[in-house]
Length: 447
Image (tube, rainbow, N blue to C red; front, side, top):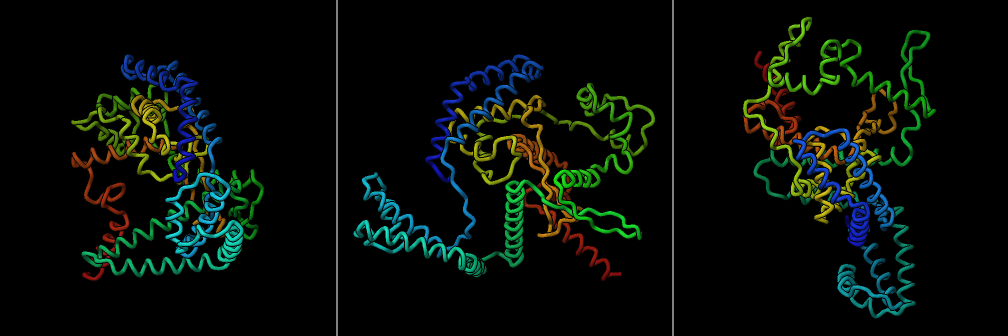
């Protein structure tokens, strides 16, 4: 998104591809058919949607391939390193102008002011080439030996400046700094490890537990790719599939599993929420009590389920471009660039609106990718690793919208307990954990 020339080129190519396949008009026709069919998606409509969705993906991937790519270098930023980049940009622009190419005089004046070389335009072509070679040589040395040191110095200065900021209370300042450090740490760890796994083809080795002849549990290193994948899948099943292992829970056992997982699952779920589903015999009392509480709220309405063009534009204008997504789909940069075009934004909103309101799951949304990342660098024991899951960008956007609508509805109707801190604005689960710990400490002191 920082390269405006590439974005404009991308939008032009997408517009051309949409016109070639008539994606906009065909999608509007499909939406009109859904409205005439009272929002019910037929099998034919589903195939039509999947065809349009696939063509949209093809058009946008081809457009991305024909655009200029901006490489993200791994040099730590600092004001001193920025001086090298600015000087090299200045020399390159001046040399380009000496060759008769069009250059921006405003950019030249701005760069001369930033690097404090007001007479740069008076240098000859030979002097410019010598200055560029000299700057490149100094830049390579600084990047190798001083970039990390300068970055640490810059962060230290920034931290000292933040301490001078006036806060209403020390508690507010400490909370802000704690959350800021937490977000920066988590974001840096997630990007670094996910990018490393994606570029290198995943984990190269893991350590699995096995019982030795002596009866003790030892670690065995596995490096073959098929065994690494099999070990990760087994660990994920043992860790997250607790509804079926080691003991089968009622929702995963007969008769509830057949009721809510077969062809009549949608009708049975709706009947349960409306309070007209007769529960079969043989269900234990706790499960029966829980199901008897699963009811629609008296003011329940589905009219809020909608993805308008304004909602879609607002969401992607605030969503970061670098967030990871499942590789079979489009990354976030496609949709952030798409909101700059009214036609593309409207089509993207419709591609999200139809599954949200009909419950239809597109074929491109059925891919998920699990990443096993180490909590501590160099710790490859499966028991001590963490699994993150990447999903399609569009489906994730819909899930976030559903979550916000559910939390807003619960807050407006006073359905959320005061102690519920997760997924709420101005509430942090860590604050609840701290309050709980303080309460227990007070109880111990008052015994």
